[in-house]
Image 1 (cartoon, each protein chain N blue to C red):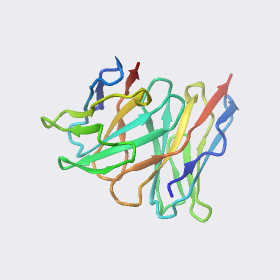
Image 2: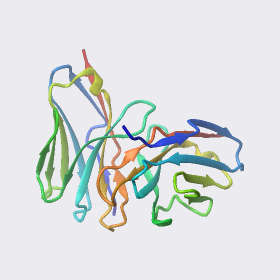
Image 3: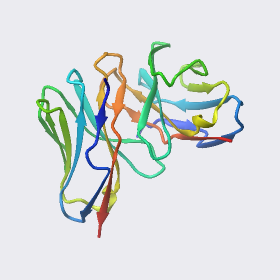
Image 4: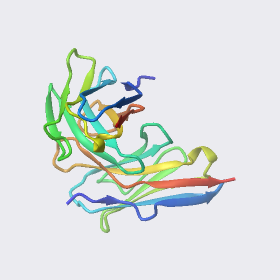
Length: 113
Length: 113
């Protein structure tokens, strides 16, 4: 069964460092997303991406964040200068169309020290 | 504004009984809803969805009910099993049309043996 894969599963970084989280969406999907979940809290939307551009982003997704689909298979989330409050589980998701089921990856846990 | 919330943060159910998990949403323009299950340390897993032109949809052991009049969504799980223990989130599609899903706070379902 096709699935969304994410790497790394866990990353520990120092405050101020750059982090890149990687995702391989399901191959025939066209819409890609990043969500995050702070421990014990709800899943929060960060950004959606379609046709090689951001279609929507939340207020969380400030200038420190960027996304890229560099090679037609990977979808990356970059945090330029991490803050303590960026510590969370980051989920990548993809979907065939703009509405319908989102398929989530297992998440990348980011710990900022 | 965006407000998808859950009435009960924790629900304990005896194995074999039926479970009902509730969700309230505030945006009457939302037209698509999904229930997700999240097990510890994993990404959200799709359970069932419903569009706003329906008021009931059934899956395998699960039923989703939508009451647009009071903006209420519920997930019914029949014959609850230990494997159903997880956090359940409802999510609504953004009516902005840009494929953003807003998640509720989550309800933890505990199945008692």
